[in-house]
Amino acid sequence: MVHRAFYCLALSLPGVTTILQPVWVFGQTAEPSNERQKFESAWKDRTDVVKSLILAVDVVEIAKGRGKQTVEQSGPFAEDAPKTDRKLRSKAEFYFDKGKTAITEIKPGYTNEDAIKMAPQTFRATFDGQLNASLVQQAENLSGSIERKSEACGHITQNGLMVAVNLWLQPELTLKHIDWDTSNLTIENEFTEVGGIQCRRIRIPRSSPNWTSALEVDPDKGWLPMQWQTWLNGRLTMKLVIEYENDKNIGHAISGWSYTRYDQAGESELIRSAHVTRCETNVKIAPNRFTIDFPIGTRIWEDIRGARRYYVQKAEGMVPVR
Image (cartoon, rainbow, N blue to C red; front, side):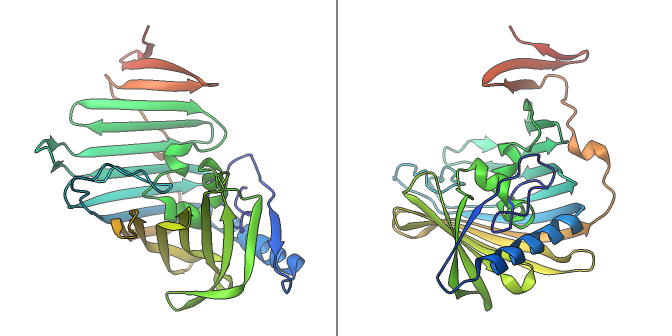
């Protein structure tokens, strides 16, 4: 299981085969062996206790219009800002079962800044332990992908909406996929306050020295991630705040989160608030939740060791496009 060695969060999937062993760095007054044991023990316990998970989520997204400004790509989960202010409500689902993972996002239709009506869109991503698959359905357009790997790919680990869930449940693989260096964590001795809770701060570097991040965790509740922030050249680009509620099966389960992305002036340009409306832990989940049956007509691409192949789904199966 992967989760146990990042600040002992492992933003990835408990079923992945690669386990990273981080190097822990502590201040002069810290006790490395004791701190490390606490982290590893807490996350091993969580890894063992969260066997399966079902989440249903209501999402409200408010995007600040950029006006005449050019699009700025900033932060690890950046998206193009619209020209005018936009507020959208959507729904999502998250399924997890011993490393198998599935995400569904249902986005409503809207009229964009060019007065073009955008049809509702459904996005699905699955990992069944061996195969990653994704499917986007928007009106008559169907597109998908497959990739055979022993760990979840970016459609799941880098999913912007579900990053809070991954930070809580399976951080390490996701952080690795977005180039955060989990081998050089620094735990600060001083406590910081997040929502009235005294937290420890963990500094996480990135492969690029221009990026830095800080993760606040609650040591009194199994080192739960409470807040994550990222900076680019000293400028705050993103803040993620996570909330929890008591759960009879696993102790604490995620109940909601707020994600804010900031522009170059330090103003919020995207605020995404999520509220968990259904949370079931350690329940039986049907295996077909973690697979995708592509509708006839879906155009599919597959990555194979750096090469890409293309197919069209037909009644007899996936037919290569030549």
